[in-house]
Every structure is written in structure tokens, then in C-alpha cells.
Length: 354
Image (cartoon, rainbow, N blue to C red; front, top):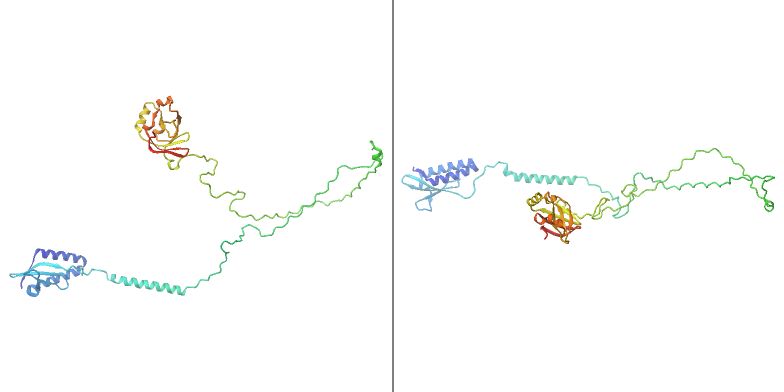
């Protein structure tokens, strides 16, 4: 029996392959190691079992039930394993739970049972009875009874009694000798004296009967409180619903930015040089002048407003005003972003208007 020897490359290749298969299936990896050990023993006893190798002087032997191909040679009294080839096909069985191969079949069986149960439920379910539609056709009229309205027909109001005839408060009495007799022509004319009316005694006044309840007309429901006038539901664009509305020219998009106003002009600005502004303030300067598009006048604003990046009112000065000698030029300290005149944009920056 020949002595068995492993070269360093062959041993390293075999060890690396065994580590890989041991991570997949430790039991199968141990069985393959035993097969390789038995194969080397058999080759040590019968070295001529292997087939001739692809390199002269070598022979090859494939180990049964393993991916290994042993390349060896016989030298003196030793069997040298030169190289171990591993089959590239991934035939190694994994250690999987016994339930995993059955999972597809179990899923198909459960799905089939669920569908059969659904069909069975549909076949034995009671058929719903459909009633005829009770509503009117689309666009037709519909009668609506409002809560609190009476359904009694309107009754005519009782006629009012005729007013009593007016009687004269003056009574005439016949006398024989009158203090102021009438003239003969008037006295000759007999005067008709109305016969006294018989006095009719009226029975004691009985309490007046309770008046019949006044029939109230059914009101048409409009969705508004009683007495409220009709008005449009939607407001006109740009109009306010209160008397406190003032037609301004502020731009909502820049309502949060600092601005300066005067004479219909509105200037949105950004501070350019705070250091220069503070230097002017230390020198005693209190205002800055801004050039405006469309006018020769200067827009004079307080220096303090620009220093704190605020908004405020300004004043206009003519270009030849002597006050401009002590007023700073705003083009050196602020950047004008946009200029509006009565709500319409007239200039856009950024930068100083020149």
C-alpha cells in the first residue's frame, strides 16, 4: 500500500470547498469528507484505477457522490494528490425544513378551498327582492310637506258688521212763544218734525266671542332666517363684505417685506450696507433720498426705518430743495426690489434705480 501525500494547493483547495459545503449542509459535508478519505485509501492500494490525466504522468479519479475530481501521480512509494477539482454545478442539497417543499401545494389547496366556499355561499344565498322605484323621474317636481305646517284649507274671514248710523246731537222742541220768531215766510212754511224713535233697550253686553284663528299662509322655505333679504351666495372678486374695506395697492405676495410709501408710490427694498447707514446716523443724518421712476421728486424717508428694515411713510421733495444737502443718497445703502404706483408695477430690481 502506497503512502498518501497531499500537496499544499490541493489541501488548500479541498479545505476551502469543505468550508463552503459545511455552511450549506454540515451532514452532507461530513459524508463527502469520508468519501474522499475512502477514495484515497483505495487509490493507495490500487493506484491504476484512475484514468489517464490531461497532464502527462498524472491520473484522475472522480469520487463517488461528491463534486470532487482528484488529480494524482505515483512517485517512488507515495501517492501524491496534486490537485482537487470541484464541479461547478450547484448540486449541494441545502438544509431546509420539511415544510418548505410542501408550501406551494398547501397554498394552492387553501386557495382552491376558499374559492369553493365562496361559490357555495353565493349559490345558497337568498335572492334580494327589488322594489319598484318610488321617486319621480329625473327633473320632475316633488311635493314636500314641511314640519309645523297645517293642512287645513283656508277659511274666509267673517264679514265685519256695518257701522251704526250717525245721530244728530241737537234736539228740536216746539214752543208757543219764541224769543226770536222767524220771518213770516219762513214761519208759514210748516217744518217737519221727525217722529221720535222708539227707545230700544239693548241687552247687557255679552263677552265678545273668541275670534277665529287667523290662517297663516304656508311660507316657502328658502334656507335663510325669516326677514333676511335675498343676496348672492358668492362674493364678487376683490370686494369686501364690510364697510371697513379700504381699496389699497399693497401686493399680498410681498406683504411681509419692508416697504416705503409716499404719494401712491410703494417701494419694496432690502438693506445693502448697514455699516454705511450707522455711520450716517453717527454723523447726525436722519433721512435718505430715493429716486422714483416717472417723477423728478425725491422720496425722502427716515434713516431709522431703513436701519431696522421696517416699513413706514415718507415725504416728497423737489430735486432743487436745499434740504437734500443734509440727506443721504439711498442708492448707496439699500437695494430697491420693486416699485409700485397705485398698485401697478413700474420698476423691478434688484438694485438702485438710477
